[in-house]
Image 1: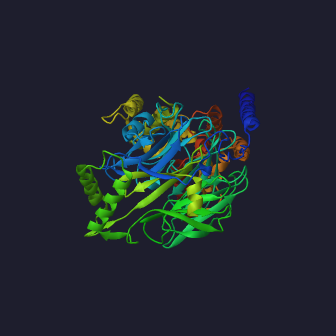
Image 2: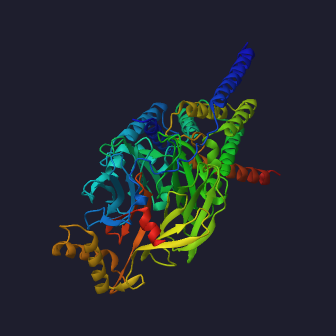
Length: 434
Length: 197
């Protein structure tokens, strides 16, 4: 009798196994990737390209006393803009938070910066110890949901990073709780974001991410419209490519420009997809130099690509804008957006202070030009950039470049890690420069 | 409290309990010790986080297989029944070591292929786990069968934050344990063979 009971139990075990796996296999589906949503200028919008050449500069951040870095910018559904960056006593410090500011399209000015999410709030809401925060990325989805992705670290350096996400359905007035994205099976560490996502025609999100632990390589994280992970695709492999900037070129094709984190004197790396991001070509070096620094890129509107980068072999003392064709075979310089006046990374302190004070006054609106304000700026710059004896170091880095629905281009970047600079320009200005 | 937090607290209590030398104390005291550890795991500290939250911060959510195996081992320590036969233990260690070796080196960038992808649309991985379950069933490895079935059921019910089937099946801690156990078992076999005249 016991034997027959055991036999029944074994048959029941087999039935449970077969039923469970049968149901799971029945429901499991291969993910389908929708065509890219290639941003086009709406027909009713002001055609920025048809206007006279136009360029304006602003500072998006409004205080000097924090180290600011890794800015991201997004249009808002009301026609304004929002920029986000990380700010604290230094990169990787315990007091680094994600800051943001809004650009009022009517007044053409940035409002005061505010704290968008803090390390403490992230820790409290995720119920996990958070040691530091890092790169934020902000982007408006086609359904007008504003997404924020940002890096946090619980243990170790940036190799211990994970990505968190929040969203807002009211242009950033209120936000959801942060949620951790599980992107790696190894304790979910070593995944970071830097460049903004692209969107697919069904509202799904293509988030460019990268790893820097045993290898340094780029990936394309495919999220559903609600932010759930649907699939993940390898863009590059090896140990020297980071921070992909994705530019959709057509329904099915896109290019990824990659930061070259290899040996010294490297060039920008590029990889192509022709199947909506599911497979990527072996990455190749393209023309401009890349001193292991972030690259930003955007579709110009006619399929050609506008790229912001430090076209230098070493240092980040010059930030340039380039125009490239779809195949990245032909590059033309458009303009130098910011650079050291001597063409060198380090200059004497008096030259450094004179240069940056003048450039600050060129951009900053009243009442920021008061003498005490300038002295405060100089003091912060001295503390942050003048470590090499009597010399100070220029840094124009970590650009993010987007094209707003009205056709204007917006570039934000770290201005000597003291301010976030915002430059807006139109297609006519690009064509004039190119 | 999310499922992940509950799993993190259970993991903390089970791990500490299994690491403590409690084998020689009376059973009621062992039960009390585990209950105390479970309470401690949920107890908020000055930072507002509990010890279980700290473990989860550094290990992320461990796999369902790890959690079930840990809890089964705690049950065995508390009751003295349900010990896993060494042959079945070796089989399980072999399975999880193989899964870890397939997954981690390539996912961390040592190969251009990414096996972690298989866990997002896991048709092939489900078939592989089904075959593994049939083999474990044939071997009468009840614990192994239970681990894979419960992990698959948990994935189907979406009880973890992860959308990836791999994260239910294996984690680095389980991989390291499985590889360590295999090494230990092999060394023991070699020394046993040498000692045999």
